[in-house]
Length: 145
Image 1 (cartoon, rainbow, N blue to C red):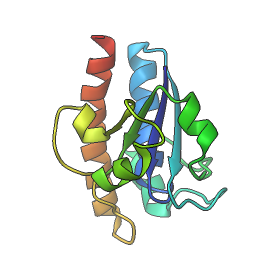
Image 2 (spheres, rainbow, N blue to C red; image 1 turned 135 degrees about the vertical axis):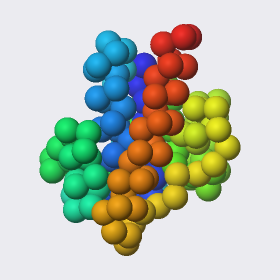
Image 3 (cartoon, helix red, strand yellow; image 1 turned 60 degrees about the vertical axis):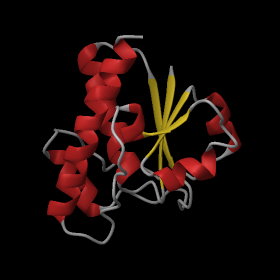
């Protein structure tokens, strides 16, 4: 299964989600291919410093992350597209119908993952924790299907 995480710039939320979900799926032995992208990403941009710090709590190194912008190829090869907000989903669902959900929607909840961009490390850590808990539910759903 190919899973794509999408946010705005691919330097915070979707980068953290992809890294966290990679950790979860490796630990559980779930066979997936994970990528992330941003609707308005600048290709090659590194993860934000605060996201890098927030991921250290999970023993994840985001220093090698390079942002990529969303494109048709990514959408076509993805079996599941998980966005951080309903607005992101609205932009993508016409191009990728039937496989685009918000992260929280797919995890069984109804809220958006707010953008910590411009916030302090604590806001990034709270965002990462929110993403992590949603991803645990996503992993459960994938395992049970």
